[in-house]
Image (cartoon, rainbow, N blue to C red):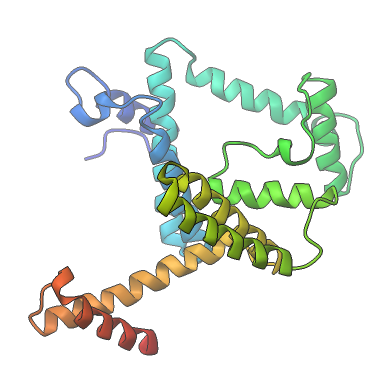
Length: 259
């Protein structure tokens, strides 16, 4: 029977128990740094459930996000860096401070005006220096999304191709530079691959396509087709092995017509 309250306090108590000297070896081993990948993974899984309109999945994934948040706070508390009450005080104070039209006397009814006032308070009251243009994009975004946002910011300042021909040509150029790097300067391959990806993101932006969404859908499409290949190989008692690549390729072509 669950003796812990079904609340944040109950969850935090469970996490504290897991982190105790006689708790779970895996949970006790975790650090703030080691938990960052889990935070990103659970956040993305939550977004996926939202996109799929999966209420049960959203509920479960939000719980996983709260678990990671609880772990991070517990690790910080054990090091006396800060405590849960500090986290809640900071966000509560921030929300009240940045919504003077709700908790104060100001009158703001337009959502865009709310955002503008939010930014003004960050600078004038909190003393945060505002970055402009592409520099304002947080480094916390995943690289693909950050590239997309950086390019959009630069485009607003007029630094942009006039049409999609620019990124099309740039992609061709970058592919050739990768080939040259592979043959002559292998140490530059990573940089050239990065340039190519950046150019592809640019093309997606010019064609009004969100690159992260496009890649997500392609990932799912690949997995669906790969599952078909695995099933056909298994049904025909064939091993998934490089020696059977031509057979797998035939099944892949079948999958492209079916799924």
